[in-house]
Length: 136
Image (cartoon, rainbow, N blue to C red; front, side, top):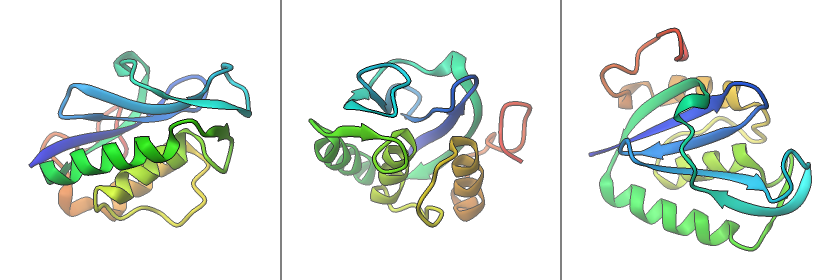
C-alpha cells in the first residue's frame, strides 16, 4: 500500500498532495494568484507550506494510474477558480485513487482536507491523527 498526503497551505489558499513521501502534485495558474490563466501541474515541494494534512493508504497501482490520468486531463487546460483549480485537482486525484471525496464543489483547501479525513477515516495512516499541523 502507498501513502498519499493531502494538504492545505498556510498563506494564500492552496491544495496539493504528496505521494509516498516523495513526489508532489498540485495545480496552479501560470500567472501567480490569477483566478483565470493557463494552468500548470506544479511538482515543487510544499513541505514548508503545510497548514493541515491527512495521510491515507491507497493501493500502489491506483496511485500510479490516478496520477497519470488526472495529469493528462489537466495538461494544456486553463486554471479557473472554482472550476478547474488546485482543490479540484487534488479532489480529482483523490477520487481517481478510489477515495471518497466531499460533494462538489470544493472551494476551500482546508475544508477539503478536513472532509477527506472524515470520509476516509478507515484509511488513515498511523501518525496521521490530530496534531498542531493536522486536521482534528
